[in-house]
Amino acid sequence: MTSTDAPVPTDDDPGITLLTEPAEGVPRVLTTQADLARAVRLFAAGTGPVAVDAERASGYRYGQRTYLVQLRRAGAGTALIDPVALPDLSPLSDALEGVEWVLHAASQDLPGLAEQGMHPSRVFDTELGARLLGMERVGLAAVVAELLGLGLAKEHSAVDWSTRPLPDEWLRYAALDVEVLVELRDVMARRLEVAGKSDWAAQEFEAVRLAPPPAPRVDPWRRVSGVHALRNRRMLAVVRELWLARDRLARSRDVAPGRVLPDRAIVAAAQAMPRSVGELTKVHAFGGPATRRRATTWQKAIDTALALPDNALPDTRGPRTDAPPPPRAWADRDPVAAARLTVARAGVVALSEEHSVPVENLLQPDLLRRVCWRPPADTSADGVADRLREGGAREWQVGLCTPALVEALAVTEAPAGAQADHHGTQADAPRG
Image (cartoon, rainbow, N blue to C red):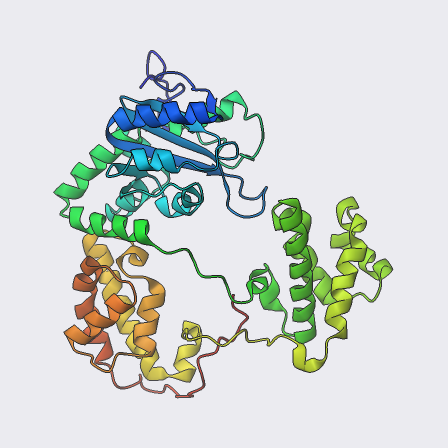
């Protein structure tokens, strides 16, 4: 690893050495089968863990496709691979069978890497490790600075990685992202061992490695920013039809949907409910050249929504799910459940503080709510532990959290003055 000849202070911490150049310089991007075959040989012959990173074009392109893959391993150096030119990286994955992959925020990169045929045998996630250690900041640059005393520039983290050719400065940034990952892993592993959290980390790493792809969202259009303020079913229909039209266009053009039509324009159109292209273009959010050019497309979607019969309009409360209602509604719907949740949350917060682990990493908030809303028939320690396992909790989480939940589920009376009002479990607001 090389930086400058002498420590270069960063603007906010003169004690940090800023990394400016990869150890062997910036490698050229691999784009041919011959390039890939050579990389396979080098990484198969390397030693120790392999650092892996991936770059996407979030906010620029449709979906979460990977546009650059970076790897570094002792004895092999650093490789930058173009997965557009080389979409099948399974030979490289096969060469790394049994090797531990070191990633930062692995859950973000593994789905895209899987599309390239890359599947790790073992994972070490430095972001998850930082969370288990109770570090206040868990971004890669912050963790590297705190544990290694090194500075990583992050000014290119949100650029359009689908750009071709990729600028040299971006490639330097990409190479540096894997430059010290293995060193970081080693320091973090020692700290986890000292803290008695190595087994916790191993369980978390395996869970993220084996995590299935997320299920498709129900009514994804309900995630339009600002839709929660619309309580009229016809307005929601306009949002839905505009979202669908935008999604089709964004997919066909491979452009991020927000660049085709911003959420604020969708909501503004739903509030205005224009009856013609002329009325639509008078809406401020549709006054720009790009939105005006496609005004006919957007008005057609609006017309479809306006023509729907009442029984085809979306429900203001969102689709029925098995999820509990929002916690703010519990006191009215089921005061006893609300009391259980209060006790459970207090217990988990106490555990979080005791073990220096964020609450959300100690136990998924959704699982905590589900257990408190619909307790298992068997509320003994064994019954609660089984319910947590069914909900995806790891054994270390089960062992820590079960006593607190057993105590919470023992609550059988609502606080004085609470009014029970048992309705279903449908959310008050639209949900995705």
